Length: 360
Image 1: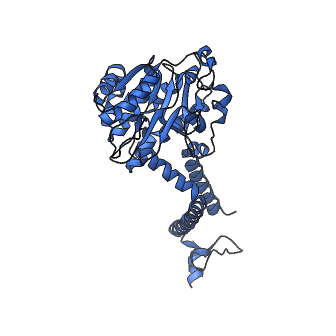
Image 2 (image 1 turned 90 degrees about the vertical axis):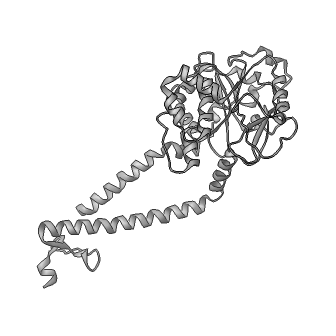
Image 3 (image 1 turned 45 degrees about the horizontal axis):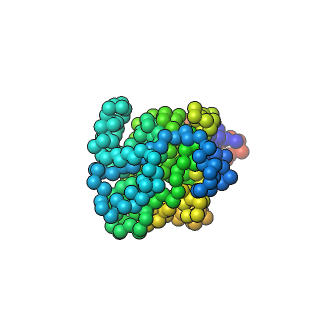
């Protein structure tokens, strides 16, 4: 193999290795099911089972939600109240924009500059949930305010990010069975986890890892959607979850355990035994899901386009490389490779011909 070709191949392999390494976690996330840490159906008592009372309660009985201020719109008060009446022995904490910032400034001053400089309000709404779970523990259920459609009866709003229809969630049963684990997240389709409902004990190592990683992931990716998703949103949390599982800390189910259990979709919503009622509309999470579903449905097209683009890039790189090599040899030795004109042919007597012999 000629030296120039070998160098070209080595350079391309290094570039490919760098790119694969950069997105390796995202690639492996596509095949991650969460089954190894799933909360199985056999572990969860039925809603009215007397065995619920005998289960340890590790996660504090606190329900956290967020809103821009303390005045929740009237049309949402009844659904929220119904959920709280189901958990009358739980403490309820509504975090406003002001109280959230005061909390960060008082308890985590090293993060306040990043918190204030986030360009999108949803990023602050994402980050506060991680900090309050890491600090106080409890259960976080998403709630926001900007929606264009009325809520169906007996539901509690969970999340929306703009003046669109939203995704909202009502408590379908008490959360007590889930308090038996040191932390839990819920699975989302087609891959990864979501951050609209989650819980943990105080100072759980996973949520400590999350809040410590926020500053490192704070960057502008050009598009608002990608920036939010990968700096504070579900994709950010999914990547950290995948890394955490490989860290060796994802072990132990007791009060000092570091394991993160996964609430699977059937136990999360849409089944008689599920913990939440979810009604889907058009929201930030809905846009995300539709985009990912579209990619999944059109994987063959995307793969074909990717192969074609890679082929074009490879051919263009080879064309450029041959020109660079030829110009270098001409400048240094006054000779050109035979493939400079007439294609990549090689002289049997050697790699190159003298320029004077070629053009006499």
